[in-house]
Image (tube, rainbow, N blue to C red):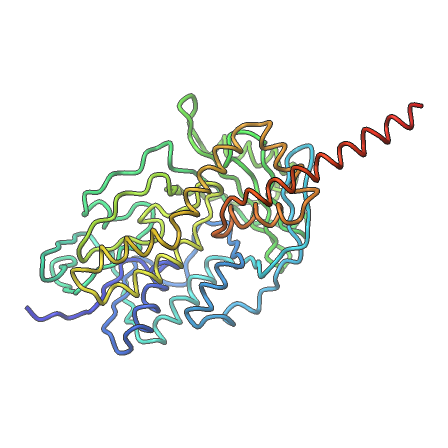
Length: 385
């Protein structure tokens, strides 16, 4: 059997494009085919927030200057309806519309040597020797980067994500109402929260994310109600809303051995504490590209490497999400973030990056909050006397 391609990648979003770039950096001259059913540039429902760790991942692929025309945010707000914490933003945090972000990554992959073809993939057949795509494309390894409704995941007969482990988000663009990026929660049902991320051109990305519960379902009306409750007035000027499902990492299927790899949303690699997926898409795509040249050993190597790189972060992000579903703990965490910059940074790293729960930082923030409250009580006592 003559192999036409070394690597076929299904899906040309951030996970697929980073896989193509990574495969070509590891083996220049490799025959890499990048497939997508859409024509680029194309829109994608997302918060458009690209954090510091994502830019580190882009830098590792040689794309450190690709998005410098978008100004980094200088500050960030985490809040609720009653309180908020605001500190200077550490590292590069830019809001880049996915229509731009994805198209530039695809362009970089093509410039590196990948072949881009518009195709809707329907069938995958894997043997010990190769993988057949749609009965006519043959490859050593196929990487599935085809999103939440992945055809490859279905073909691999892996477990379907549970409904309760799949977030639903709604997003729209409208005139900027606040200059600083902000995430506003209800201090309950985390990761239910609203956001406004200014792009820098006078418009912002507005949205709301929620997770279905046993006692309620998520609809467009409930999502819009969440936006209006937490961002009153700001989102009323949004004309068009789009929704999307996000398979959280808590639903991640067992990744198999062999020549089929799943990356990004197709592998349910979405941060369970926030619904952020760009970083894990870039990271998993890069690792898959590095492992793609191992043929039948690619799957095992990819699974092992992925666990080493993001396993602890995903576990800690899940723990953080569970803690924040307790209203008193969510409120306490926000107060700690308000008085302690390190805890604020650690919270952002856990929710929007690849950070971990840090007991020492948490203890220090709790002690600082206790001291602040003690001073407040003392001042009140002095005023009364």
